[in-house]
Picture (cartoon, rainbow, N blue to C red):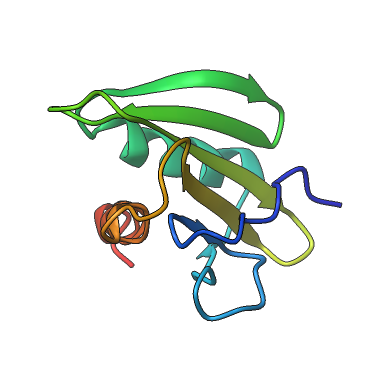
Amino acid sequence: MTRLSPCPATPNCVLSTATGETHRIAPFPFTGPAADALARVKAAALSFPRARVAEETPGYVRLTFKSGFFGFVDDVEFEVDETAKVVHVRSASRVGRSDFGVNRKRVEAIRAKLGG
């Protein structure tokens, strides 16, 4: 069971467990220990400016990203699915309707840092 919330109806959210094309994004596959995979994803995400850990429990981490100009805050969550050997992700803006694709681009930039 996942603790990642579904995306709202607005297009400013991506989620690896979503079924609709608007919000769906691929999870991060991994091999080896789940804790190591989550640590690698977290480290890649924290390498971005204005990224901070907001909450962390075994198998789960939530980070916040603050935009440089307006100071908008986005929440990015990662949760390990050991059975499927993936780290699920949810990235969403807290306010507004459109994010101009920022959340999707951020997740894909994290994926690129991981070499995938």
